[in-house]
Amino acid sequence: MTQNEIIQALSSATSIAKSKITNTAVLNEAYDYAKPSSFSRGLRLEFGNVVVLLISGTASIDESGRTVHVGDFRAQLARTYHNITGLLAAEGATWKDIVKTTCYLRDIERDYEAFNEERTRFFQEQGLDPLPASVGIQAILCRSDLLVEIEAMAVFLKAA
Image (cartoon, rainbow, N blue to C red; front, side):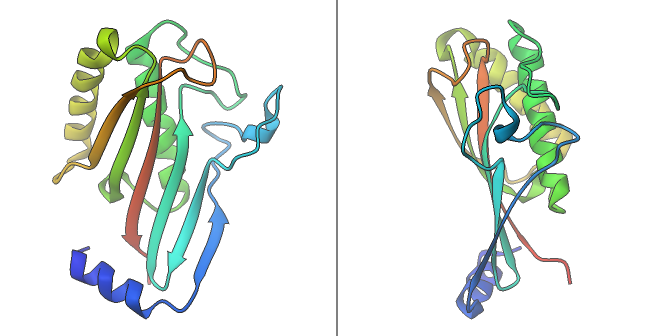
């Protein structure tokens, strides 16, 4: 989708449809946590025939809400990508629709080199060109055993 196509589609939109994104086959819903949390895994916004997916911070959580791969940064990052891939697929999207990621690392000094290696490999496997805009931030994450969390934004045209 070109920038002009997005602008044209957005300018013709008369309303914004909003729905939640979910895929319990890859990770559970936040309200199912032992300590429930009040957020959606993501939102699907429709501006006419343009779809925007806003994917909440996603980490190495399994379908039962447990942290997986505790202490293994690369494995946690792989599971995070797996979870985001599942959320995208649930909405008919792929990584090629991702336009922006925000990446939170518990210890950016220790883990950034591994993060960049794995991200580069993963994005090459996905055939991404151009690459999404991105930012990396050191942060205290919501669980002490999480080492990485990623939020993402995708934009694509609704299937006809």
